[in-house]
Image (cartoon, rainbow, N blue to C red):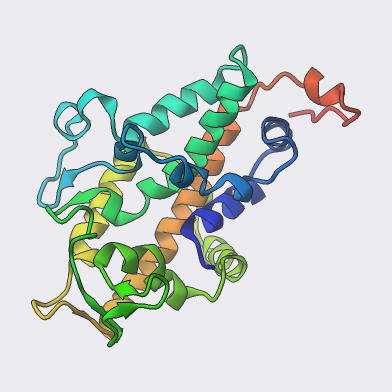
Length: 259
């Protein structure tokens, strides 16, 4: 299964500082990030559903918190909220564990263009398309829609599985300045996703046939967005867990990571 969430979690894990890695292991009771990458979808309900996306009109160029994120119920504000919770080591560990699990998921969601571009089709879920000559999605056995194309159709074209995708993205990142990719605000990251939705995801004809040419222009976007999400998630975790108290780790017979 080529899951974007697994890929982003694995990319981030590779980039954790020793301090952050120890803290993550502590909070997740030894589990790797990839094990919790899809947790937020499993517990999704009416209240948390809006946290997975932000509706920025496709032709807009400015982000407006009041308009785009009423009552802070959207992905940009929730990333900030859970980052702050994770960074506060005076809070209950279970609360911080939950924040970590949401953060891993929402940073990936934020980088999926259709989670940030609002084109009145529920993030492409209502946009029925034909993908590479097929009307039916082999993953779901239902008609293809644009959101699924960007969730798994294109990923499947990019790499056969998450491990292979991580190898390819690490190769891509070798030629990038990772420190530069990590900077910027959550809102800037959301607008970058939004612009990809406008410039790439919705770039198809009235016949709604997504052909080889469409895939060719979309794959570099998929690669770059997954790479950014992985690097940025690592950055958020490394900074949130920078001053983690090491005594809890030392207490378990693990040598104290000096950071």
